[in-house]
Image 1 (cartoon, rainbow, N blue to C red):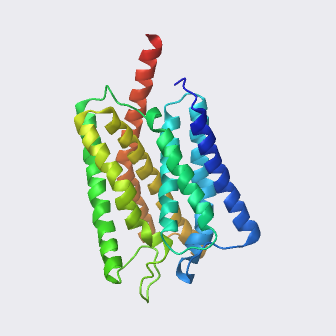
Image 2: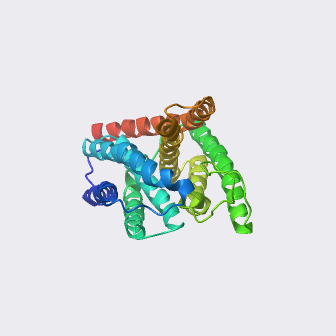
Image 3: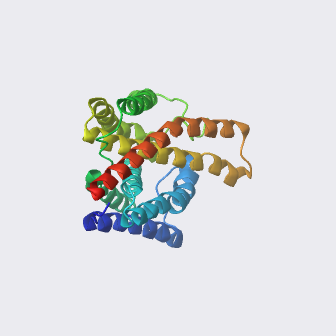
Length: 281
């Protein structure tokens, strides 16, 4: 990969800078992100920890890989940018304070970076039909599983119902104004269309399907990492240990994300081979 997309590098670098700067301002000023007592720890402690020690480093690794000409660079940048856009659109859809202006900047920069990286993602012109079909089936199962869960949440929200929620404290009505509970809206608006595009494009053998698959799989794998950190990490920070139930959930998350890692690996390897053939010619 000998392309040096300066616009993408500038926008994505600014996104990482805004994220790191925002966390520093949050720490120094003590001006909290908006959240009720039930969600204060997730929003004002875990959010910064996961972002500064996981999301930003993955983004930096993507920038380094891109500069070195690795096919992994666009995939890591796309996954990071998509997660930034999704997470902060979710937050902006909930309760707000002055942090919403920083969130809006992250949404804009993340969305722009995801668009700019599109042409650099694996095109998959030589993928076998079996691999395309396997990746499409995996993404279809993931789409259906997420749609069922998110659909139930959205219906409960629309009808004012209370339901069991992950990370929601019991003993009271669910506060649907919480940012973390607005993810069903973002899923149906942002994620599901990309999953559908990836599935259809893979089955048709189109390059846009492979690119959508790379972005979707990267998003899912990175989201799995975030869930693993916000579940077990929360328990460890609050209690000093991780419960057997949390270990079980973590194992399920790893198994669910494993096919996404497999798909990304052969997507990137095929792109490497295509670039090598092009360079040799």
